[in-house]
Image (cartoon, rainbow, N blue to C red; front, side, top):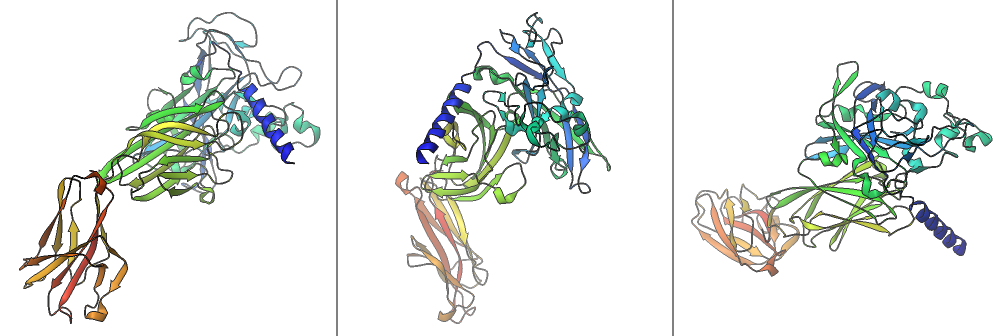
Length: 540
């Protein structure tokens, strides 16, 4: 069994390598317009808990130096062929500093199975040429009605976006919907009929979007992605296009309209303030685009946002791994996919100098999908590399490295409050940055207090220590031992300076502090205690 499995893996890898060498020099198809958008209706519970079906139009032309094979399918003999363009769609929304995909995995791919050469275009003069080709300089344009026709819409999972190939045998079109039985489901002859497609409810297979997403404020973008079999990856920069869209609910139905000109490339090019980088698995598999947006610091804390778009990687992504400063604090870690199922969300873990987001079973980042990752941390961004592990076996490396901003720069100084003081005594501090003096301030000191002190230590209490037993009810200790900085005759507040040397070896070190005030008769012992603070030394 082990030998057979190894042979199977090698055979799969070899066949994929052969298929992925299908690039035809000179092939360059240019997607230049997202012409319109249409709402086909809604389904499900009452607004805003239903789903909406949307369609986009598009136009493209042959900008290359060769005629591109394009065969009308099914053929006169009834057999389906793979020699045609595939067009994928998604809808995204930018809001609150984040751009997310709002269309669901149900959204299907358009199979352009009728050959057209409509005339000259912005790609040049429409040339004559052989039949069953998309000729140089010619263009084709599809309305939302053509792109929304479910007779030609099938699942993205059947397409290899890297090679542009599709196997019609046993496909969705071959099986029909509802599926036929017997040999007809795998004979390569289309079983999906216009009668079946016309019987679908209005949302099925189109660009499917939950109303809960459309009803949120933000800017929406419809993306169209043209997949051309045999097009070299170096010529695919003009295969994606996005258009800004408006959506309006009038109390009974949705309407949509275009809201601006198209922008070439991934919809992540629309994300304001983000950096973007793309990498693929050599010449063996397609590309991931990683966009990063870092804001802050606010009190030494940076907010990191990542959006990863699988453009045309057939093996899919199973992880996002980032270098993370080992001493960095990490909070507010989050993830978003596109299926709305929290039970299959990616999980995250931190080990040493790495933060890893890991896919759950059956939820890889597949092509035409955009996933989001975010967190807060006390380390500044720096140029680096993130790693995406491949989800399935195949030709090429096990992972893809993509340049990006990563949380592995200078560690920030931070201050964190611990617990609460008793009888109104409180402690705060400014951030302990190298080569500065942090100020530790005690507030709420009762009138008439003649003496008190602030304890500075490298040893915070592992858990709060209840001081009731020594005559300080409702008070707790948050430090153990240390140096007492005494203050005399305070008037409401007292301040203790903490000089931080300009020594990089101190970055990441922590100092704990707590104040005690001699304020009888508030407690039997005559003393009250503040909250604790932890000062984390940073380079900035």
